[in-house]
Image 1 (tube, rainbow, N blue to C red):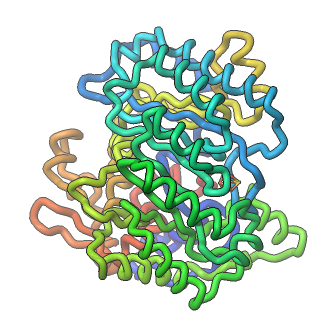
Image 2 (image 1 turned 30 degrees about the vertical axis):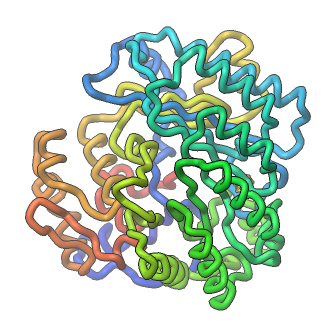
Length: 451
Ligand code: SF4
């Protein structure tokens, strides 16, 4: 997140937040709090201590597994991914993930809990073969049984999916398939470094529907390099025609560790070669409205769902509301008993630690009670509205009092209203909520890089 985005609030003046920005380098989206730049190796002992305590009453356990392999690195990608690992390296990795999970399985923080939700992210989990996936998930189930898991999400890249592999994925127990489509135009896919093309999307989606996954989500990105109004309209029409259970639309950000930023740096450019934020918001809004026309409902800053009563996303709910998230795999992010942590960010150090029988944790952050309140309030606001009574019951104070200053600023800017028990964002605010959330940050967390 750019520090200039919140200049209005930093000056202490209540002036409208700026409405238009070019896309410059840096993280834009708020996905956790306090910012990652405050997580440090010296806090790892506090994580170790948190693991030795039993779970907090009523807090569910989730499980995240990071699969860091991809066929190609997309130019906008900022994840830890490898495109050059052979099957022996992948086998070593899968074995390391199982060994890492084994190191956690007997710890007191588990306290007999079984995961309520499970998420396979990456990278590309569907890059693994059916045999590799079965070996991984059989081992995971032996260590932490899945029978209480209400949701198992699996990210997939369309070009890695065959009918056979999709059946195998379903048989593992996956309930929510998330397809990284991003765009339907082959030129846009190619110029942005994606590995798949539109033919593979059509084939994979048809197979997935035929197999009968309970929930299929598709991802799109608004504002890829060379995006145009016409191409976006076509892409949204094709997405609507698929009738997914949910659609997630990301606005393109350009963090420092992307290929796009490397190219900007080499050319001495400060502005990324993608649409400005106002245009990206307008494109997401267009997608939302096209889906609303056929009965979908907007239920977060980036998602629409076909049936809000049926289509849940427990991983997101758990993550936002402070569930314990046991995360395994290179560079993965987790949360145990109030302490955030991230694993070793590189392949070899990760493997070396686990093979030596040690937890591969790189850095941690023990959250304070007020930081947990800020975190949950901000992240839940990304769903569009927060209930005052629910937050008061959980944290002891009414958010209207706790966050009087930032809420007043957002109200003054026309972004928010308090309607009885609910604190509600306007659609305009929802589409730019990430840049507004910095208003809730503690002062010491504002003037630094987010990640
Ligand atoms: S498929 Fe996803 S994780 Fe892999 S390189 Fe592309 S954006 Fe990154």
